Length: 289
Image (tube, rainbow, N blue to C red; front, side):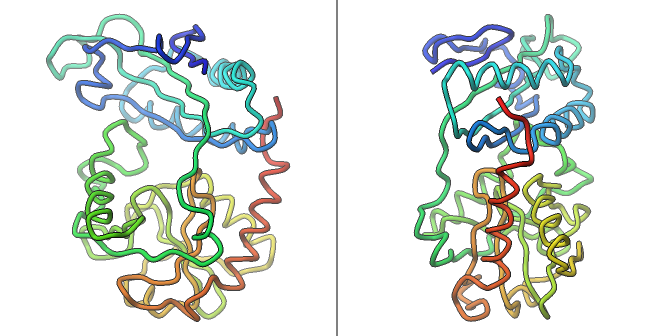
């Protein structure tokens, strides 16, 4: 496996960063997860745009242009001869001292690109549906760290994932500090009510997911009414359907939340329709390599 590290393609064993890199010391950096399907990088421009937005928010100057980042991503995919892949772009603040001050980081930020395979959930869950549980860890508040920033500090999500795993679940539902549904540990949440599609707005703590946007796009093209609107667990428990979206997860049906059966207890008609439409999008919406 070849990994891109600061302009060079290295063997996996040689892909290293300094222990003084502030990405390691403090989670000071940003990242992006992307998928490639049949030699097409799905919505590459949108993902790279979001990476640069996250970096701008934390005043991190990425040493590559967006076009150069795209070319480096393609270069890494080709070097690994991958037709289908999961891509992780990482930019750290770079090497510094043991203090917090980013001004003490000398040299350029580190740019790392990893391309590999990923399988987030077992295949049978996409057919039968998954059960999730609400955890006590709330989604990070905008006033603390804006959830739109995909920073390397993912402890909020990891703590929620730990709770879910300890309770025997694959995924956890996270509420914001006002008790509204925000998102899951790595996925956006959707529900179907009165044959209309709802997902929490980003102001509730939901990431503006690229897959989330693709699903909203697919739903609108199918003349499905869509809403980015606040809702509580009560509305979710009584929804006709529920599903999660994410780069790695794609679209996965949810059939039970906190022990409450959702709809018929099986993946719903709209969920199945949107799964098909999403897979159609992955065949044409992206950059070929």
